Length: 171
Image (cartoon, rainbow, N blue to C red; front, side, top):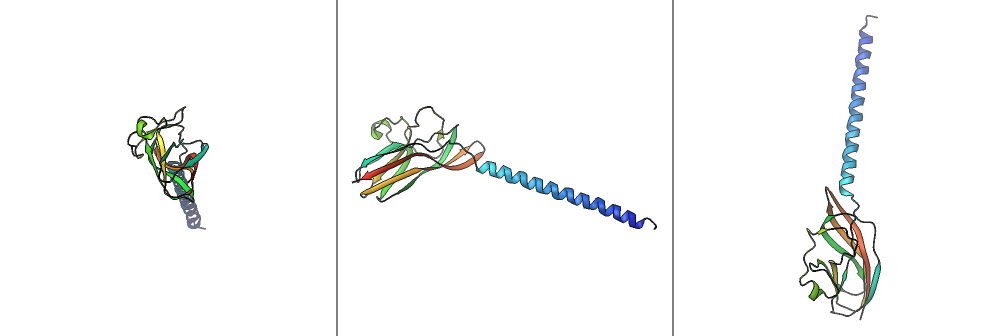
């Protein structure tokens, strides 16, 4: 043997190891990007859903109630949509009560402010300033199973269902 075959084997082995190292580096980079993407889109700002409350309601008469959405830390709301079902038709809206809701939406709040952009802080008390208003349009039941909350949490953006379950019997 003149050494050419050994040189070719040696060169081929070095090239294979280099390619394998590049494949491993590319796979690790891809995994890091996937983990970062998952982290950015899967925050967890809430501990879990709240209580269940309910009662009677009348067709055409507005009923307002605090949503009971309490984050673990400060978040900025983008959208809050109650998860509504039941047999009665109803208009359902969510807004911010600037004055702090104490039971009379007209006296306590005036006009409700839109949710988008509102910074919701954690609180030891019930967050009574984030309200849902239900105006039943027909007899039956209006059921709200929490609210789908779109929010920004630092660099993360998330969507979670949280808040109080409500059930109204409309006559």
